[in-house]
Image 1 (tube, rainbow, N blue to C red):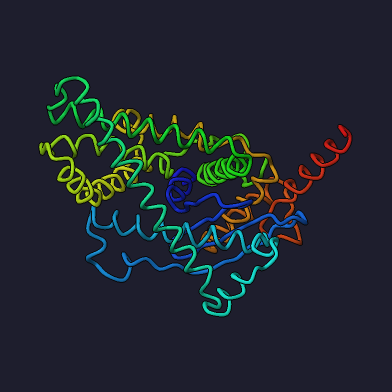
Image 2 (tube, rainbow, N blue to C red):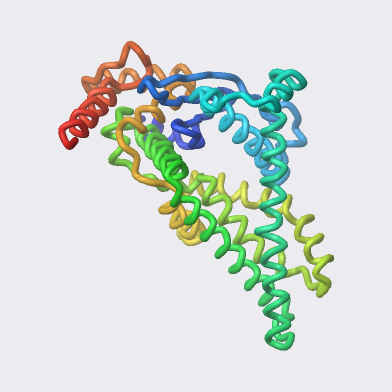
Length: 354
């Protein structure tokens, strides 16, 4: 019975790291928890209904993966914008005349428009880095070697390796930035808290800290799966024209995204030789995209989880905490008190070091 209860938690909740916080989503319920400069955890909750629930067509395998990808892109931009607003980042810089003009003309839609522009620019950058640049690189290499890279499989393999190299380099370099590294720590907190919840252990920062920060359903693994699938799919593109090849690759993106989604959903619920081998590169990459979080960051992730999961699971987690002798903070009802104590202890130790 206990095993069945734990198994029912698998895949129930997923999330995303944001600026100084974590977003969690369970079904239609979504929560965003951010730790402000005053040390308090601020949360927001809202509903999100996917097109897959509204229309049967969008629940067809592969097609549902494309829908999910677009929705998660939009959701990601929205939650990042909200986390900035919750932290008051937009209010830190003095308002210029141009900012005032934008506010007057666009009103409350200004941040949505800016986020939309950012998403479009991100897509353009992604196409340039992961489609155009590898194709140009292999084309140049083909010219240098006298045209020996003409076989579809070989060309696709080299392009795929170049694409992976660009991705790994980009992630590693951005991870050197202090703000991004801290976001990677919250990414680790997201994974650890979900692993703790799915294991059935009392959901405390101390228990979550013991759990793995590597998860097969992570977006990092999804990207790596798509990169590997692109090698297979693009090997069937035999055209020598670079323009036609680029256009063909753009047209195959929905197929690759859809197949990648189906695999990630399967790998999240099955552990066998096939999933272990195919998931290994993505899990390895999570050593870069996730960092070990502290218990204060884990408390934020736990807050987000408990605000997002269904009420029956929430009561179940509260019962587990009570059985373990844990108390819940009054100021943040869904955060175990041990998280606050550990945080205060860390601050005291930091003060002693000074």
